[in-house]
Structures are given as structure tokens and as C-alpha cells.
Amino acid sequence: MKNLKRKILIVICIILAFTLVSCNSKKGENKQVQKNIKITDSYGKELTFEKLPERIVSLSPGATETIYALNKENTLVGRSDFDDYPAAVSKVKSVGGVKDPSIEKITELKPDLVIGGAHFSKDTAKKLEDLGIKVAVLYGSEDLDGAYKNIMDISTILGVTEKGQTIVDGMKKKVESVKNKVKSLNKPKVYYMVDFGKADFTAGGDTFIGKMIEEAGGDNIAKDIKGWNYSFEKIVENNPEIIILSDKFNTKKNFLATDKYKQLTAVQKNKVYEIDDNTLLRQGPRQADGLEALAKIIHPEAFK
Image (cartoon, rainbow, N blue to C red; front, side, top):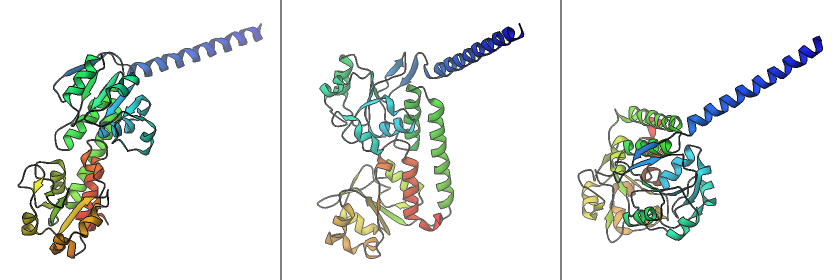
């Protein structure tokens, strides 16, 4: 009799254990599967998600990086030709450019969401929407707040707002640390070389990179202009102490080989530096890293 009672008690305990596991599992699912998630995209369009997207095509490299940072890469079924970070994204099927991708390739992937960025065309968005595909165009203001908003919007869509907030908080902490390290230091004259040759292009004061130069403790010589156009005469007149350019396409090598720039102080004193410009140009989790990289170039002494 005692053995029978003991066996019954064991069975009851096992049933209770499975019941608790099942309840906890459902609670976890409920945290993820939120009903009627709403965001307003950069076109001012309110989007409602009755369930979490499971098949996403991202046509914004910054959005793609964010999806990976949120550990939701399993939802990514398509990307643009320009998506190259992290390296694992190369295994995801490409559907073309960020502006006018292949509609046919996108529809073949049967996405329940397409994310576009700043260069995404309204015409492409309409074609996809006419096919019944939900489109969210996400690009923030030209500052870190724009990156923070994009990250939070994407984390909301994917049902992982806590993870998104953790990423944003980490970025803000790094930004504050960088600012504190450089705030009392002298500001050297900095020129950001976007392109050169027959015409010169830089980051004006209203651009994200232009603002980041100032945040990183530099004096952007092009801070008084808007946009990207600059003149060689202005470069010579302002004679930057530091020149920063992209680490891609042999930009530094070609720049240093161009005779007319050899008169600049930064060139003569070997103060021409490369940076991964994707960390600055893509609104996403790495933009705080981009700011830190700029600051380390401008004020290496502050990071020793």
C-alpha cells in the first residue's frame, strides 16, 4: 500500500512539473507574440502588425545589422547587394540594390515584411504594397537619435523591445564615454574626404559624419556648408591638420598619389587616416563604434 501511494505521489509530481514548464513556455511565447504592434515609418505611414514577421527582406544595410544584433537573423530571407555585415549575411539571398531591387526576386521569397532605407524608392514601395507585401521604410534623423529610433522600431516589430533598449543603452554609454574623454581637449582642424579628383566632396555641418567629427573632438573645416560639395581652394585655405577617408577602394593610396593634395599640412605630416565608413553611414548598432573610431583618430592620447 505504501509503495502504491509513493508511486501515485511521484506521478502527480511529474504531472505538476510538466504543467509548470508548459505554463512558463506559454508565458515566454506571449512576451514574443504581441498582437497589433504599431509603428510609424519614415513616410509617416502607420503600420500594424497582427503577428511578428517571420520572413523579412531587408534593403537597408543598417536594418540588416540591427536584425543580427537583435539575434533575429532567422527571420531574414533576403537582403540588398550592399549588405555585407556581419559576414554571415553573405549566405542570405540578395535581391538587388537598395533603391530599385528586383521585384521578382523579392516576391519569390514570399516575405511578410520588406524594410527599406533612405534610398528606397516610393515607386518600388508601391509596387510591393500593390502585391500585398507590407513595407516599412525606416531611416532616422541625421544624428545618433535617428539610429536609436531605427533600432527601437525594428526591435518593436520583431517583439524584442528589451533587447533593442539594451543595445541603445550600450550605445549611449559608449557615446557619453567618448564625449567625456575629449571634451576638454583642443580641437584640431579635420577634413573628411568623401571623394576627390576633378571635384571634392566632404561631410558638411548638417551631415551625420560632419556632426560626429565635432562630437569626437574635432573641428570640421566644412561645418559651415550644407551637404557634400566642397572646393579644393577651400581645402587649401583651411589647411586641415587631420584628413580622414574611407578604408575601401584604395582611397588613401590614390589620394596620397594625387599631386595637388601634397601641399596640405595633414599630408606632409602623415596625418591621413582610414576609417570603416560603414560604421558612420549606416544607421544601426555600430554608429557608436564609428564615433569612438573617429575620436581615437583625432585624439589618440585620450584612449591610452
